[in-house]
Structure formats: C-alpha cells, structure tokens
Length: 267
Image 1 (cartoon, one colour):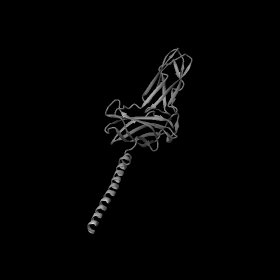
Image 2: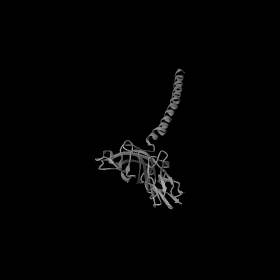
Image 3: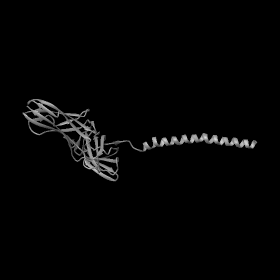
Image 4: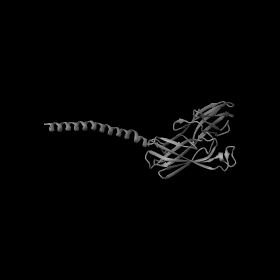
C-alpha cells in the first residue's frame, strides 16, 4: 500500500510540475515571440530617412514614381550647405543595387547656409522600398587657389560626401516635390507705382527657407529691384516690381525647372 501511495504522490507531483512549468514555458515562448515581432523586426527595418554625416545637410526629400516612365522612381533631395564657404557645381550620384544614377544639382553656386535641390531618375527594380547610398560631389570654394571672389571661385578642389536614403513610398504617387506659388497671380498697377511680388517655395508639400528664386520680366514696361528673391523661415521670397509704362507684363519666378507667373496690367 505504501509503495502504491508513493507512486501516486510521485505521479501527482510530476503532473503538477508539468502544469506549472508548462505555463511558464508558454509565457516565455509568448514573450520571445512578442520581442521578435515588436522589437527585433522593427529594429531591422530602417526608418524613412535621408542623412549625411558631414559636408551637406539633407533637409527634406521626396520619392515617387516618375511622371515620364512607370519603370523609374524619381528621387529628389533638398540639401543645404552648412559650411562657412560657398560650394560650386554640386552633382548627386545615387548608388542603388549596384547601379549609379547621377544628376546635376541646382543652383550651380551655393552660398553658406543656402539650399540646393538634386533630382535623379532611378530604375525601379526594388519595388517600393528604396535603400541606397548617395554621394554629393562638389567644388570647395573655401580651398580655392585664388579664393572666392564675386560669386565665383577659381580652381577649387573637389570634395565628395557620402550619405544614405531609405524610403517606403506609395506606387500611386508621382514625384513632383518642388512647387512655386506666386502671389498675386494677376495684378493691376498704375504707371509710376511699385508692388511686391511674393513667391512661396515648397518641397514635399512644406514651405522651405533659404532658397534663392529667380524673377524675370518679358518686356521693358516694368523693372525689378533685385531679379532674385531669398525665401525666409516661412518659405516666402519677394521682389519689388516698378511699373514704368502702360502695358502688360509677365513676371516669371523660377527654380529647379519649375516656374510660376504673375500677370501685371499697368494702366
């Protein structure tokens, strides 16, 4: 009887052991699963970003399908010059899956703190997840042989800065990150008077500061004060139009191949 009772107790203890530690093992397995799916996997997927360590600053970017080709993704970077010296003729090279795609950036001369835009078409063999190295080649006017002079620099050395971009983008969005909005779009002005023509520069839907836009006229019935405008913190630039003679003048504001017009009637 004692032997049977002892076997019964050992069997009961074994069952209790299995039940107790079985629950513990299930909790551990569940915890490991949650750690994998909610911590390890998200950490292995980089967040959407564009970054350079030195040389240039990536202020914003836009990635989307090209308007010209469904097999091409347009990658546009809004960069700024954080150095104390100007840079000249910046060029962007995107290295994606072993292929290089290059594009000239605008403007060709970038003052300290100013903004420039680089856009390149990249063949879409990566679905909607772009992960690429980005190189900016530029001429360093701070080390020019003769120094920077009157907006130009002579025989400057070349510098190359490496960055990276990762983005998950919608295949339904076409890339058109840059936009110019002119206010007013139409205006009636008396001869002899002056008026401020404002323009808002947007990149990826956000007003962007530190951008130089160009103002031009189609005839001599008016003149501009500066022919250029520099966007402030709100992304707005302005130039003053002086009405000289009666007639109609078209004011064109442009940057990076984008432009907008204001039609001025001088009475």
